[in-house]
Length: 162
Image (tube, helix red, strand yellow):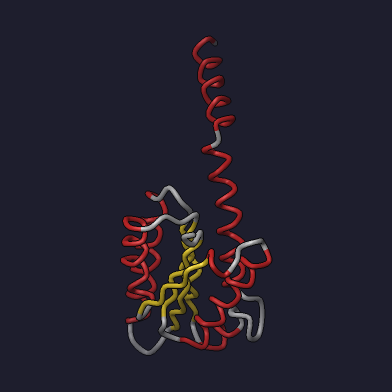
């Protein structure tokens, strides 16, 4: 059986990203997904996440893709470039994708803020990303369901007759 959910995890800032991925997998498990239904693909950093998601969309079938990373501001403009391009790339893919692509990439001013968001010193935003994926799978299934398509057709018919 092929996995239902992909997690694309940046390896950069591993203390943070490993915890985010752990939280996501735990949340998926609590919602009925087995370890065999989750595939973790590790990439060098957040900048590489969109290209990997694009390749996954072309070559594999998933119900959702969760993007996990941590971009922490440093002393140069590198942060702005990486965070911006990562977010933009994921957003572009998400708008064109038939499946949910969830942005679980932390963009923080410092390591303390990242720690507060990865479950070490506060809520795990990886778990929140997984919950978003589960919710969006349900939303998109409702939109695609034959009943909703019939309702839309009926609504279009009523609007034409009015």
